[in-house]
Length: 232
Image (cartoon, rainbow, N blue to C red; front, side, top):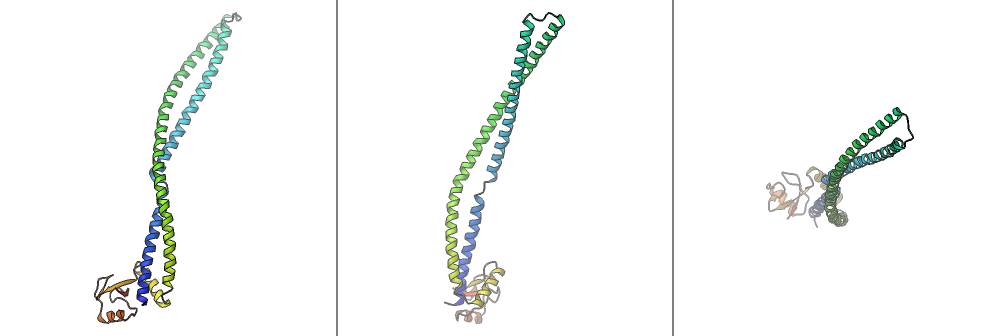
């Protein structure tokens, strides 16, 4: 087998390896949570934080109302016990009971508002959770497929790299060095096929002497694009 054919076949392997590596990188990136799911999780977390804030306010109001009820009950018991005879003390106690009642009514109104607000935020949280679950479910299904593809790609890449190692061993040091240098310069296309008298890379007709040398199995370069030529 000519060195041109060895390098041409090596290039075919390198091209497939690059393609598989590129796809593997895409598959790995696609297994990261998509922006839509990340944003949905953030909305759900924000909804949960807001819900907890209103629940805390509801608890505070409940405790405060309970404290007021106890205080009002004790004050009313004193007021109606008949033990207090001083008119001013009775009047002050009456005012205290009335003030406690007004404060309790205001707190109960606020508690009602908080309860309705809680219902609204619970609805928002429920919707946000449902969105997360839907997107997460879609992502898990896609990830399972991508994970299987990743495993297959990794296996094929390993096989290709082993095959490349065997193919590269068939190349002589000087041609292999020229191939590596041209691959870097020519965007991975170091070897061009020669069909008839035309270079298939640059589509330029090469000289008769170049054709003769290629057909003799010599390693020569295209007169125009400088790629190594391999007869097809």
